Length: 164
Image (cartoon, rainbow, N blue to C red; front, side, top):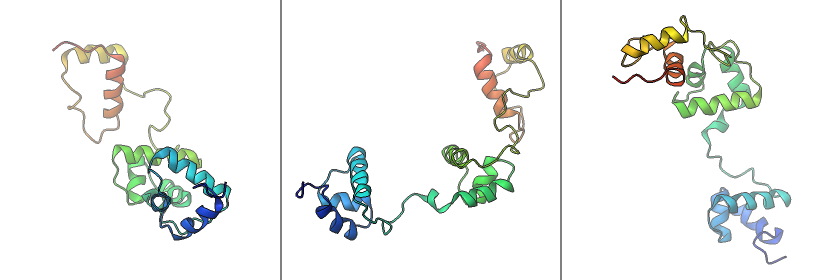
């Protein structure tokens, strides 16, 4: 086992010299794949080797849960939360922040529309169906109106598309 690429004798000096996991894989002559990376990470942890000197690549690590919680407390939406963290509020970013919020158990119940069981639209599905039969889009709704996106999702889900 001493000559295995995963032996402590081979891993210890390579880990000490490497700058990150990819560099470690290169030094050990391993193919850079997710499976190999995962196995290597497990072996390094099992041997108790210190990787605190590895460079962190994920920008999300610079936002500890405490910073997210503080930003969430003074925000009124995920978009505003992202902006307070200095992130661009793109769809993927907002999804990522939402997962981080959920994982940390941060309270965002004060955000309008978050975890709403049902849509709070000022009309019935029947009224929406009748309007959709003559409409071509939801563009008439103001962009900043909180009902525009739920309206579009509801229409796509519950209203048969009219042939225009």
